[in-house]
Image (cartoon, rainbow, N blue to C red; front, side, top):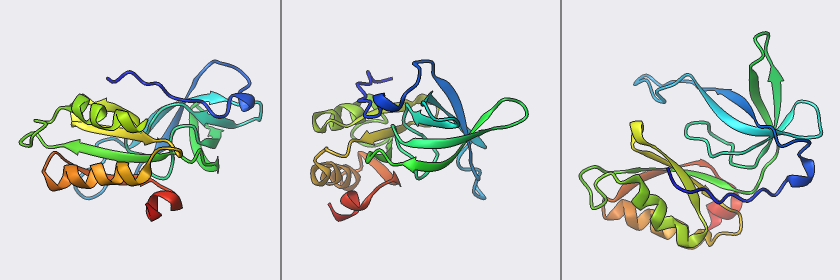
Length: 171
């Protein structure tokens, strides 16, 4: 796993440093993807009841990004479930799958290293050969998208957008 140097833009909201786990329900397609029915993410409670700041990058959940402020509800078993995004962090979540038969030979660290110069960080899931990238709002989005497209063209990886904004779409 890569060394994460994540920035926390919402320190003033956080009531405590104790992290909690927040679950997000996932719908699997006909082929069984994603391979799980829920994804759990780390989050920090805020000074507001039932509101957290997401502290890691989602692998499967769509339309959320690291450091988004999210409403949660607690079920009868004490599980916190993620709900509506109350404040988007401005970060984008991009998923990359390096090809095993490509130039990177499926190396997740090589993907992370390729994007690090742009201030992009991420996490890799070994069992799935998947990398989830956190693209900060202040990153050079044009350059990041160019690298994604070049890597797809030369068969280093395939990629998809999981959480983007207008600036990304326009880049």
